[in-house]
Length: 81
Image 1 (tube, rainbow, N blue to C red):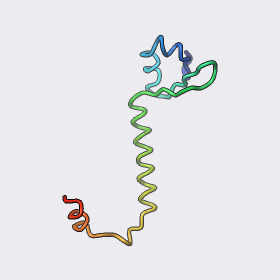
Image 2 (cartoon, rainbow, N blue to C red; image 1 turned 180 degrees about the vertical axis):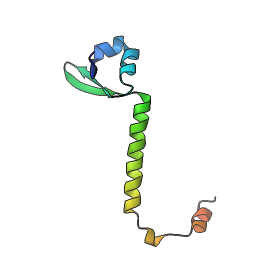
Image 3 (tube, rainbow, N blue to C red; image 1 turned 90 degrees about the horizontal axis):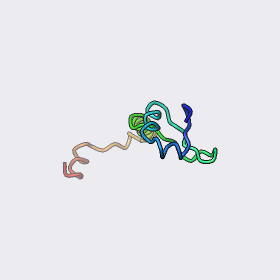
Image 4 (cartoon, rainbow, N blue to C red; image 1 turned 120 degrees about the vertical axis):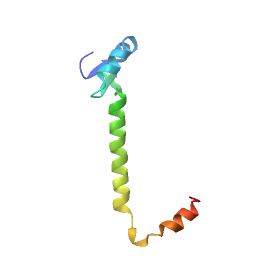
């Protein structure tokens, strides 16, 4: 296993080591020198997922037409809150 990739066989025999190596940067999982997957630590995955959610939210806000807004009280009543 080098610093950036691991074989499936190495992953099977040393899963904890592979997970540890993937904490800060994704680890490439290869089989017969072909990329089959990427392994990343929990915190890295959550950071990436959060960035994707933020990007989607910002895109939706830019796309929204706030000129046709509705009164909050109407929406709250409709949602029974």
